[in-house]
Image (cartoon, rainbow, N blue to C red; front, side):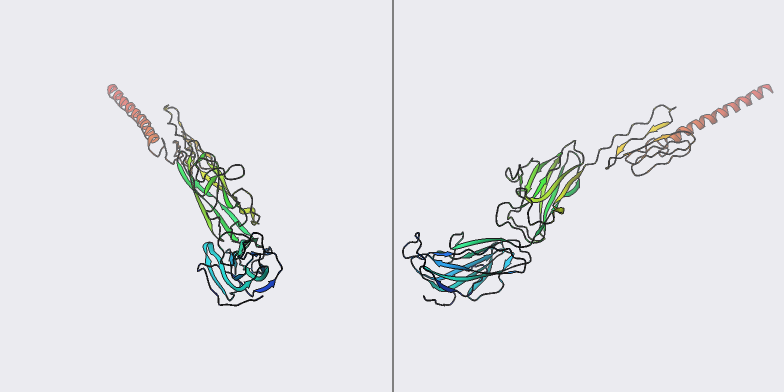
Length: 416
């Protein structure tokens, strides 16, 4: 069997990072494939052994290329593609390296050899796990004829998924805001990846997601395009559907890099009778399954809290009975639901009563002071009403003294 070494010929400019090395011909007595047409090669690639490398580890294995066809494969274009948590440890002669979509590293290598029908050759595949490695994939192989592979997988071009010996910490971030009953309020919730591994599920459609429980007493009027209603165990309707109680949100590209934070903004209609209300966000998956790579569940949940101030009750009018020397302060609720107020009294004792939510008002001797919850004093000595009434009474009393004095003087003059 002959093996020829020729100058490399790059057939695709958009190639990915790869590694190939010495190619050794290994004659094998294999029968031609029953499906191969006469006069055509039919190359088959063996499977790479599974692995779970730690960040920093180098994977060094080989695959066997076997020709099960009826004609020789004269030259093989071999391609390796690595997801972003993997890289090539060194460059190999005869390979062209590049990066393509989604940060995939590729190597396109020309193996200048002839593989006769029934023969096999072996070629190495080497890559290393980067610090952010977690859920990764490796594509490797050629085409049935030995030309550059296309897209998709078959016996000549394969894919290996692997999970690095690492983790990623998902964090759910809620929001604490205020609104008025009957109004519309936006809330923004977030899903963050604190690493060390980047996240993209390579094995299933159960992608990383954020579960959003809408606060009771509110209605989701506007929903992000990345969020779908959540049913019993998964998405239950088209993304962006309004009016549901629970949603599941996930990135459009199913990717969450280390340190990346995804935001989802909902517009909520607050019902007229709604009091302060609380919902929840949870870092999970599209089917609400806790990801095994997340080893820190303590920060998986957070709350959505919408504080709605309670309306104050109107203040009652002062008593119309001039003989009733008391007024009643209005009661109201502060944001924590505490009732504030008090009752003043008239007389010479100079009593004081609590009148505002922020503090107390103090009355003078013989006057009543009563405050309202909004901080304005009503019917007190501050606006002069009791003081004027007191002055009128004093003037009346003083006038009586004058009348008596005049009468006494007239009586004296008449008697004289």
